[in-house]
Length: 90
Image (cartoon, rainbow, N blue to C red; front, side):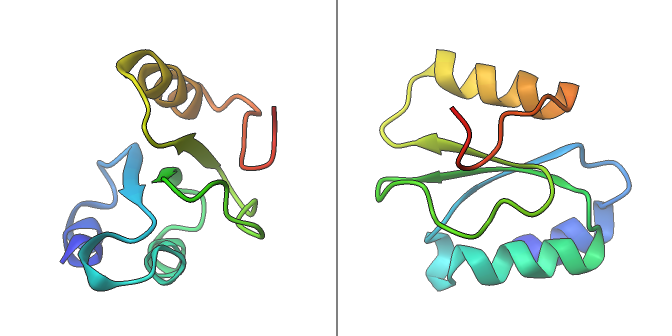
């Protein structure tokens, strides 16, 4: 469902916030589908299981669960600004 909505509105979506295991699908599959539609879409991934390996292609940011509003706001601002904080970065 989320990928379909993204496909309909990809031109006006600045950032996608997604959990790696939401909706019964694997987050990496969803990320691949989003990238197929718009390769440079900015994505903020969340998970309680730690940073996933191998997702540092394109603008991908990671926020560890549980997170607070300050962490989420920081990741969102960073994603929108295009700063270099990515998966695997301090």
